[in-house]
Amino acid sequence: KSTNFAKNYGCGAKTLSENLGVTLEIATKLSEAYNQAYPGVIEYQKLVQSQLALKGYVTNLYGRRYYLENSTNYYKANNYVIQGTGADALKEVEIKICEYLKDKKSRFILPIHDELALEIAPEEESFVPAKIQELMESIGDTIKYVPMVAEIECTDTNWAEKHE
Image (cartoon, rainbow, N blue to C red; front, side):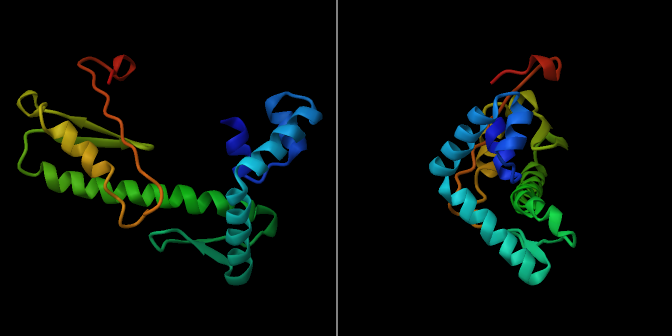
């Protein structure tokens, strides 16, 4: 997981070695193995950075633009496109959930990063969570080739005691 995030931020073997606390030799092998296993990531990064160099901005799948002027930060554009698309997708889902809950006793409480907190009325426990999950997984019109998976967790007490 650490290698994946580091490589998505444009990390090379030296930085990977420092971040993971491993030798340069191991970090180089990890980096090379990652590049071989996921050649599309490198192609994606080059595409995003070439668009940024050409236009001065990149656009996420919802059309939101991200401007970066400092070429030493171009690697951030790769993450902006992914994270920005995810954030906009979650906002789209929040609207759908709020619309769905208008005539229900259950209610949307707040978003927390990439999670949504809801209060489900006891008499709606048999159908509302399943519909919420369906809504969260239904953004296929915008993000067509990446399956979205939403997990439902519950608690009667506090967040630390949540369960599926």
